[in-house]
Length: 86
Image (cartoon, rainbow, N blue to C red; front, side, top):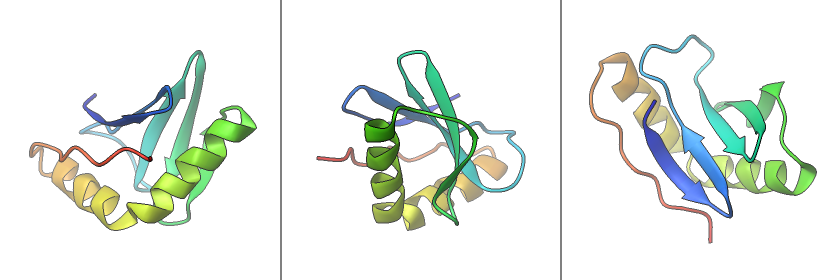
């Protein structure tokens, strides 16, 4: 599972053979969440409130890049690293 970004202790991953809807995995300490890219919402798992707000803001900023990575993953191409939230 390629790491595509990391910020404030949050790691963002995307699997190559993952299922729809287009999403990514956010991990913070022992907490994990799956984030729907197009709707900008958590659809499985969870993170602490502060971290989920950061992840959703990052998703909004980088939605186009995330969708490009999703399409690349379906072709088994190398994924792009996406800038961290600052």
